View (tube, rainbow, N blue to C red):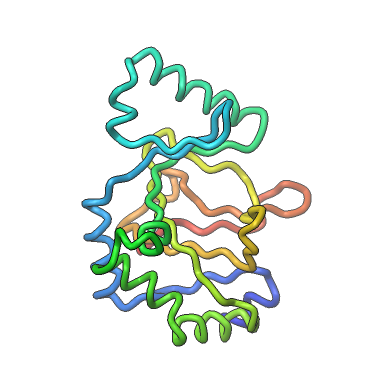
Length: 189
């Protein structure tokens, strides 16, 4: 059923993709992550640690955030917290625990077989994993997930949000050719 929906609409919303125990373990593990603030800036992409952000004086920090928001009014922009699971696993900094297990499953024979089955695409050979966390004032403008040199075939979002109210925003939106919202998914558990 998921494969048919994906083939027809170009996207599919798979509910309960993880066993509850696995979802809970990932959610709990995120409580101790060292998040980086990720944003676009005048010199390109920035990933700022909590210490680097705290090291900026208040006027500099406020000017940085104001610049990010101003750039969002005229083009693609983003600001959110990130944790690059794939980078840490591939560099050997993350070898055990829920994140390493999740990454290894996605890239295991059975994980790749499942994804190939859902998509009908035998070219899938690797699955990247990046966590993002959105706080008040954070956003990700309309975009495609194409990235030069990444050879991406598909994108996925795994929500680990225990409770969400759509009035808060935060929807994953899909736009039609005339820039209307064709469909949107609310964050959910």
